[in-house]
Amino acid sequence: MKNKIINRRSFIKGGFGGTAATVLSLKSARAAGDFDHYPDSMGVIVDLNRCVGCRSCEAACNKEQGLPEPEKPFNDYSVFDAHESGGHGGAGRRTDETRYTVVNKYELPEIDHPLYRKSQCNHCLEPACLTSCFVNAYTKTPEGAVIYNADVCVGCRTCMIACPFYIPTFKYSSAFSPRIMKCIFCYDTRLKEGRPPACVEACPQEALTFGKRVDLLEIGRKRIRQNPGGYVNHIYGENEAGGTAWMYLSPVDFGEAGFDVHVPHEPVINFVRDFLSIVPMVLVIWPALFAGFHLLANRKEQNKHHHIDGGEE
Amino acid sequence: MLITKKRGIVWVVAMGVVLLCSAAGRALDQSDAPESVTIGLLEELYEPVEFDHAGHTEMAECSDCHHHTAGTVTQRWNCKKCHTNPLEGDTVSCADCHSPNRFDSQYLATLDNPELYHVEKPGLKGAYHLNCVGCHQEQGGPTGCEDCHAMTEAGEQRFNAGRYSPAP
Image 1 (cartoon, chains in turn red, purple):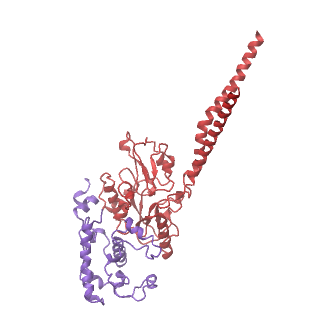
Image 2 (cartoon, one colour):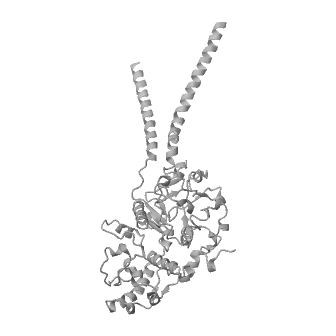
Image 3 (cartoon, chains in turn orange, brown):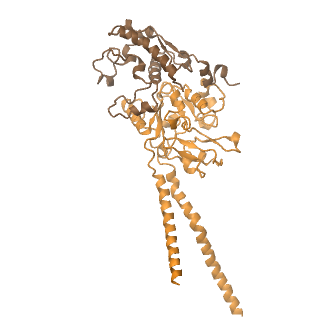
């Protein structure tokens, strides 16, 4: 008997241990939203004042990543014209399965020359694509790149919905071996060896400055300070979506240059982590809880039947 | 990819011409300046640029491009704070100060030096283009890529241009 009690005690102890483990795992899920970032991660700051729209970055990216032949040569600047940009509410060309980066042109009344803006994956510090991916196809590397593993991808395309910058695109031409197409910061071929991405190396104007993200923020602030009339006092990507590795400087309000200025300053995981942290609890506790409710309810019913049966006898 | 050793050597040779000219007399003036400079930094994708140096000395001050290294006072207020007494130096060519490998890890490591003031010095390609294109935009000079650079075959491949244009 004593033995039995001890057994039951140790069982209960184990049960408490299990509960503690669950609570701890909840804590670690919480901590994920407060992830302190990789301190030496790299980034790029894009200076819209310097870009001349030469599309050298697009050409370099196309060759480096082995992407398909473009519809028009990369030195054909008619792609900037409005009728070429097509839909998307005049937002210009977008990244797709054939191009990881695009440059768009913005004619603005307040400046006497067109403004060009390169877009690509911004390589968030706490990427929404990574958060949303239930097979962990995405990885944020210590170097700063958000890379993707096609081997485990099931093609659910949740990352495309999660991304606040609408960057990941689906390779619809190979839907049966699902593949998301997006900029990977030239991780495999360059970044992990400490070299800049192909677009940065190709940029003649040094509109793209590659370096440690912390240093780039200083560079950005310095440029704004030394030319206050030439820049708006904001570095896009310093805080947007919780901070991004690719950041921007602009002479006009970012909204005018096609940026989404309503992107929250918190990482997307902060909006879902409370919910996500409940999921394991729901999966572990609810079946047992409801099975218990079911048994209790049934027991009452059964007792009732038993009682009635007994009464009849 | 863009910058190979071979092209680096070509570049050094090209700039050697400039240095020889400057070494002849310590005081630089217009007559010391080279007639033209061959710039082959991007020679994989583009034919080398024959820069008409003499022609440009008539349109711009030495300090517009050479800052404080050609013996003339720079007009930039921020530079004048330190470079008060400019002497013609041994560092006249662009490549003496502006690195062709601006974003290599070795170069980026030098930026960690807390004593370094010029943390934002453009690389060689950036220095050329920011200076040249900036002035050409202001002064109405040519600004199209191929106004200065004729594409090589490798350049046409890179840009899917010319013989490598996509089929219509």
